[in-house]
Length: 244
Ligand code: PEP
Image 1 (cartoon, rainbow, N blue to C red):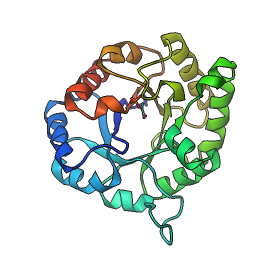
Image 2 (image 1 turned 180 degrees about the vertical axis):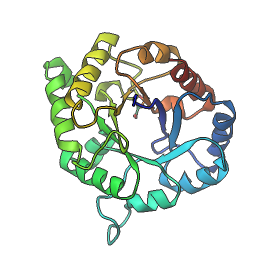
Image 3 (image 1 turned 45 degrees about the vertical axis):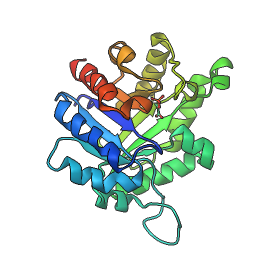
């Protein structure tokens, strides 16, 4: 089984009901040949699913709690995401790790909860600029993989997103050889346990660099922030992936 190609949009804390018009344009304009996922703020999940109707577009959450339910004010359970129509959930995004102190163990517990609820967990890993400058990128990523992936993970219920922290929202990207090096390491590290897992690159992907990035070995798609907010920016990325 070849890894599935996935173009995933992370709207972060952006968007409102009016922004759902972008979804109409994405559904109308998307090419087949890859999976397309939008992860909106949780309050937009259900209206987005309703808006898509039978359209061939996936929706996902941006985080979930590790518990199934209970007294966790402000949190969302994986089963609630699934109930709202989500198929995926992003976990361990560097903004969650930085803003909320999430550890690898937290991410693994959330991924387990996601799998229990039938969701596909998109587990994010990535080095800071200081770690890259110190030459520790591969060690950092290896440790994050080791700590963040639960033993219930399979190639079908898990996606890995390599997102260098310094490339997120900055307009900067690693060069192709740097992306290739990290993706090859991840593929190798997971070859026994998750042989066909999809590996996404994330960090300032846009129409202008998508074709080049999708040509890199072991890049099966992208996790896209800023360029996923407007259909006109996101659709060329989807097309580039479908054509890759
Ligand atoms: C992200 O937040 O996952 C991301 C990759 O953002 P951007 O595409 O804006 O760099």
